[in-house]
Image 1 (cartoon, each protein chain N blue to C red):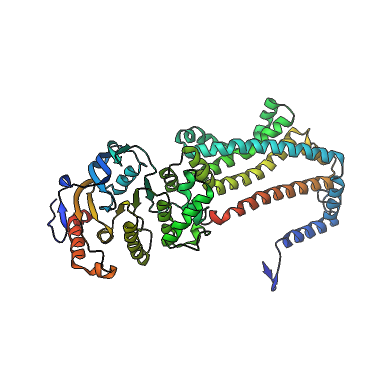
Image 2: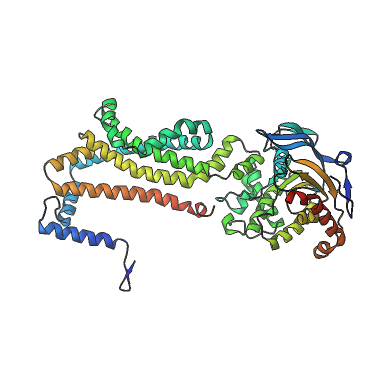
Length: 250
Length: 269
């Protein structure tokens, strides 16, 4: 973006909004919005506390396990759906229902099933992330040109080789796009799950800060989460870019 | 259907005798559900010759080629290659695809060597062979390029090099030049003739272009549509020692083109 002939970097808008926030905060209009500087200071305090570090550890662990399950189950299921008509018929409807369903509403049910602990959070992360991963893997497999599969067959490739050397490689851009969106949804899942369960990880902290009106820490924690989600998404996006040279050319 | 013989010899399909048939198509029928795509096709393909399957769209010429390749199962009848009945793809046949079927994520070198890679050949060996065929189709210097960096004509050269690299006896070409622009297409046809002469392989070529068929073929099999049947077999007998531009102006060449067109025109109306 350029303004008055100067190039303005993308991050500039963030700075502008941070400034607006700071001013509103200083004006002391509403206690919900403390000054940005105070939030950042609280953030530095926060990350040094034991409770934050423990909560982070629990959160990361639930997230990683949930995501690993979502990818480990979602990608193979999506690939199978893309390849085998009957599997597509069996799962297609359910995947499409769940991908747009308000999953937060299910968390209380999950608490009954899996208890008030980490298991519920893991399942929540899984349920938030898995459907879009399935759908994108399926879409990726469906767009594999049939002539490429025929080509491999005509040169004597087995079904397993075709899967490994043609279908998975060809569907990789979509699979990675699904994982990226899945990661973002998984972050939502871990936070919403923890907030609803309210006794573990960041959920416990959010609960604590909002009940004690500790808005500085509340916002600091929110910013940390936003940043984490963006960094995770950027990492997957970077992996996507590495294979873009062919994704854009097919 | 009767076709008056002009410059070419025409045969009654039943009486065609070939000496060294590499591929025999025996009573092939193909149905897609209730649609009859091919009816009772009997053909023989000689070693070292280029035979073209020519016909209007819907005559099942690509289906027949894919049945010979073992990519599509026939409803009845059999394909015999080198004396053995075949049911699936085999190393003695290589296929060149209309849309090139190149892996967009692989370099020219890997694409050309892919048939060998699937056979389990070591990388050094297959790259050596791939380089030789890349050179033969005139793509040296492009080994490390990706398909999207090449023109359509160059991409099909990669497809042809890949088919040659596996050293199959039979090359099956499914409208290989239809996605290539006109200038390149002519060059291709000339290169193809050179390759037919150099490599003593059996070429089975599918096209819908009459001129292309007459120009490159030793024998043309005319198929009629719905269901696909052999309607005529023509040996163009073009003198290929002449230079390409003269061939295209040769009255004999033009007469065969005209004859085939007369045979096919009622399908176009």
